[in-house]
Length: 303
Image (cartoon, rainbow, N blue to C red; front, side, top):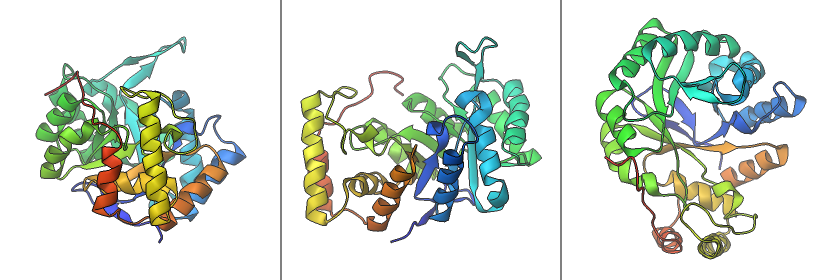
């Protein structure tokens, strides 16, 4: 099976069901980074996600240069809202209309493009000037500098605010078998026809080949129990463990793409093989996976 493409929210964007998150590609324009991006595109990945925060813009420049020759064939996504301090020690949250309107110019330049397909607010709190921020994104859409916009957040109250008050196409959030907390907002997103871009589907390797360790609110023994369930499902269905984890996330009904943070060509090869095996999990297997680990919930930033 080859990659399939899903419509992102109510937009006209078609994104590959598995996509490339470039934060892990450190060091700018290196042969390895460019090879990974080119090979990802060659196997059908068309959605590439970066942020102006990553390596102080170096990541955007690398992505822009690597994809310049195929710009019209890909969906470029980046993020805004964080500003590095001049000494490089850390960054500050800068969620305002003037900052967003100004900062998009730098991202456009680094990405070597005159439009960004998906511009995302990189975080956010319920105390931000949300209507002002929405207005900034809407202005950029009207000016043709961005095609669509979204947010990157795991805070239910922030997600609800933008879902109800804006025209966001997507919400990027952490979502996996180990972290199902954001399922509480899925019904709202489905109602508003807003897609989820899922990061962390492969659980940082904890349910694959890394030793089981504590994660979020789980003990290492709980993670180990879930890991064994994934192994059992993979063996039963004749799939790789990566394929099982990706299928689980993509089967949610609201996830348009699972973003993989790839650092090596061998990891990309594993993703390619997992995609070839992708198929919808039988309901019995899905239930078995969910029963292998308790459901956890958010305790903060609730609606």
